[in-house]
Length: 117
Image (cartoon, rainbow, N blue to C red; front, side, top):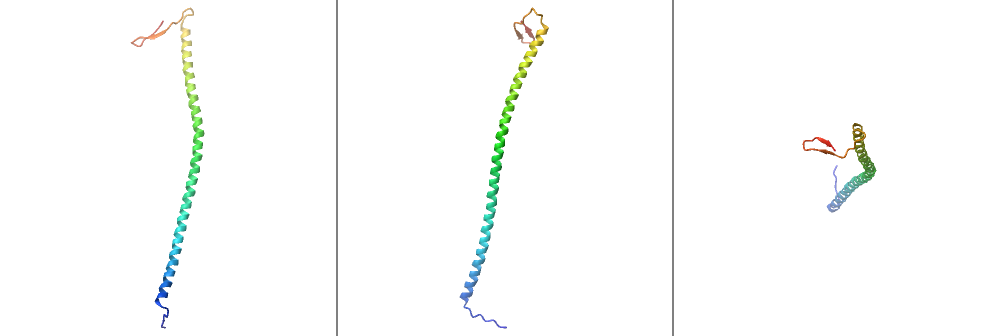
């Protein structure tokens, strides 16, 4: 069978260009849609991470207040233990002395020996 094309070549070229333009538009649209979709997921992830960060910072502030209070209580405990130890040493020293003697002072010489006045 013989095919005869009676259309002028300009019309055929125009039709091919039209189909190429449509195909390019479809591909471009798909590319833009996929880029927008990717961008949207990134934006959602950033917002979720910002929300998580805000929650973590709030929790950190709450725990920092607790840590500060614990540090303060430990310092108070150490001061009270130091006072208790001094009182124990004085009480122990009081048992070793006669009741009519009074201690006027303590000292240490250059060789490290302790003397009581």
